[in-house]
Amino acid sequence: SSPNEDTTRIVYGGVVYHVSVDVAPLRRVDLALRFMAEGVKESTYSNSQAIEEVLAREIILASNNDMASHAVKKKNEQERIAMASR
Image (cartoon, rainbow, N blue to C red; front, side):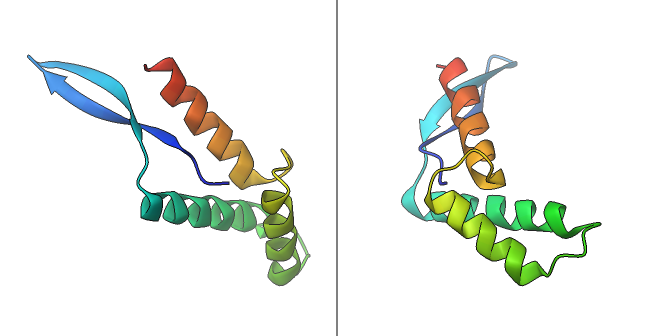
């Protein structure tokens, strides 16, 4: 569930360009963990399920690259945006 590409802003002559860049390995891990934590937080906000169960389900879905996982959805969205900015 870690993205391979991201976008960055480059200012050239007062104009802002979004450029696709490769993601460093440590940042990939950080983003994957952040996406999982966001998904767990959203799932347990008004739900009676235990946070441990939701976290375990999110980890399993992310490891299977299942689109039901919040982390995989965010990864695909981020890579789609990076591909469009090439």
